[in-house]
Image 1 (cartoon, helix red, strand yellow):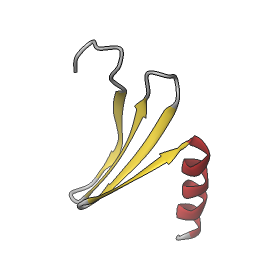
Image 2 (cartoon, helix red, strand yellow; image 1 turned 90 degrees about the vertical axis):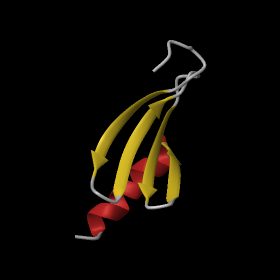
Image 3 (cartoon, rainbow, N blue to C red; image 1 turned 60 degrees about the vertical axis):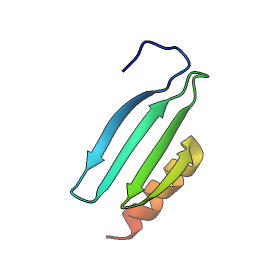
Image 4 (spheres, rainbow, N blue to C red; image 1 turned 120 degrees about the horizontal axis):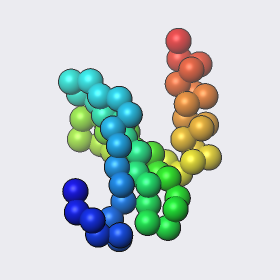
Length: 60
């Protein structure tokens, strides 16, 4: 990864063969969350991510 301060810092949260969840620390200080489901990527801001996690817990 470059040291460009305009680029987000990314970290993988979880990964399976077909799915990936990762977060990005944006240059403006905001964290965004991303879930890749095959060829679809869903992007979340913090509040949306917390609600998504609540939904996922209900799926058990």
